[in-house]
Image 1 (cartoon, rainbow, N blue to C red):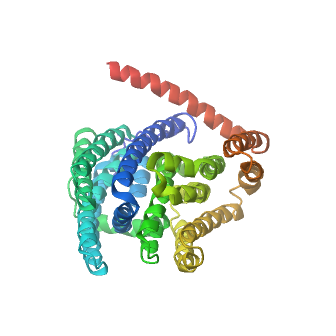
Image 2: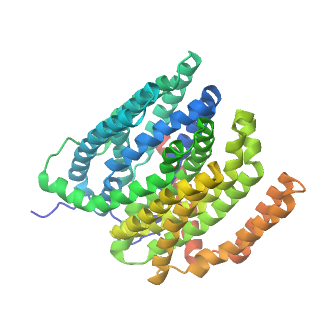
Length: 505
C-alpha cells in the first residue's frame, strides 16, 4: 500500500537556502538555546557541587556520571540519526518510527542499566561508590527516554519543546540538589536528585510528544525493530566511541591515579569541554534533517555546511584555547578557590580540544546525512583506541596532563582521518578550509606566548585581535558561506518576529 504523502512537508526547492536555511536556523536556535540554557544551569550547578563537595568527592561524582554515560551510549543505536533522516525525508513515517525507536531505546536502556549497576557493584570495593553507581544506573533509563524525546523534537524540527523541558527539569535538579547539599547531604543524595530529575524530564518529553506531535506507544514489530537495529548499529558504535573520547578519560584516570584529588581536577577541566562542546553538537543535530534532504537532491550543499563549521570551529577553538591559557587559572580560582588551581591550569590544554572535536563532528554529519555510517565509526573507533592505549603510558610519564594529551591524540586522529577521507574524494578543499585558518591561529598563539611574560591580559587581548584580523585576511568567507550566513541572519530575524507574534496571539 503506497504511503500517504499528504503530510510530507519537505521543501523540494532548496537545501541550505530558503526553507532549508530557515529550518536549520530555527532548530539550531532552539537547540543552541537548549544547550546553552542547559550549559548555563549546569555551570552554576558545577560550581555549587565543586564548592561544597571538594575535589575528591566531586571527582567521585563525575566518575559515577561518566560511568553511567558510557553505558547510556550503548542505548543510542543510531536512533537520533535515523529519526532525523527518516522523518526529515517523509513526515508520514513519523508515528511508526517514533513508536519503534521508543520500544528499542527503552529496552536497550533497561538492559544497559542492569549491566551498569551490576558491573559497578563488582568492580568497586567501596560501598559508597557502589551505591552511587547503582543510583546513576536508575537515572540511565530516565535519561535515555528523555534523549529519545529530544530526538523526536529534532526530527520534527520543533526543538522549542526540548528547550522548555530542559529549562524546567535542569533548574529543578539545581534547586533540589543545592537544597540537599545545604541540608548536609552527600554525593549519594545528589545522585538520587539527579535520577529523579531525569525521570521527570522523560515523562515530560513523552507528554509533549503525544500531545503535540504523534501518538506513540510500544511497537514490537519484529521486522521494524530489526531494520532499525541493522541501520543503527554502525551509527551507534560510532557514537559510543565518540562518547568514550569525552567520558573515557575520567573512567580510565580513576583506575590509573592514586590521588582522588587529581581525579576531581581532571573532571572539572573536562566538564568545561563538555559544556562548551555542546554548541557544535547542537548545530550538527539541528542540521541533520535538512542535510538529509540536501543529500537526496545531490546539490552538494552539505559540504558548504562542513567547510563552514570546520572554519568556525578552528576560530572558536583557538579563541577558547588562548583564553584557557591566559585566564583559565584565574577564572577557576575566582569561582572555586585555590583548591582547584590544577584544574585551572589544565583548562589551557583542554580548551584546544574544541578544534578537533568540532571538525570531527562536522565531518561525521556529512557521512551520516549521506547514509554512510561505517567510515565515521571506523575513524572514531581508531581515535578512541589511540586514546585508550596511550593514556596509561602518558599518565605514568606526566600524570594528569597525560590524560589530556591522550584525549587530544584520540580526537585529532578521529577528526584528521575524516578530513583526509573527504579531501581524498575531492569533496573538501583542505587548503581553504584548514590551512588558511591555521596560519593566523599559529601566529596568534605565538603572539600570546611572547607577550604572556609581560602581562597575561595584554597577551590574551592582543592574540584575540590578531586571531580575528588574521581570519578576516587569510580565512576569507566564500560566496556560498556568505549567502548561507546572510540567509541565516534574515531567517533568524523573521523567526524572532514570528515567535513574538505567536506569543502575543
